Image (cartoon, rainbow, N blue to C red; front, side, top):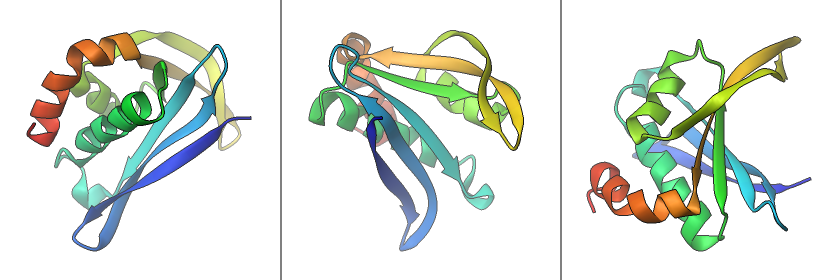
Length: 131
């Protein structure tokens, strides 16, 4: 069982969302999974892509992961738009990947590796964090 981190997304002092880096596995895998949510009132303000970039920087540059994955139910268009905006690599559909509310849901699996981060981090940081 891996460990994890949660990062709040705040507007002023108000918690409006969260990004998690969880199921971290070490050894030969060096992998973690990112998940996120945002208050509906704050959706579309680029807070989630920005927060995911901060989380990726932490994952690769601070704790030294090699790979980060994000799995999304394909019909969740808002979440899919986040990974598309970030240009993360679609690896395919995992059928009946997670049980959610008693239903085994398919998930689109996206990933980025440390090598991809090294190539793309400057662009991602400049685009989403202003430098």
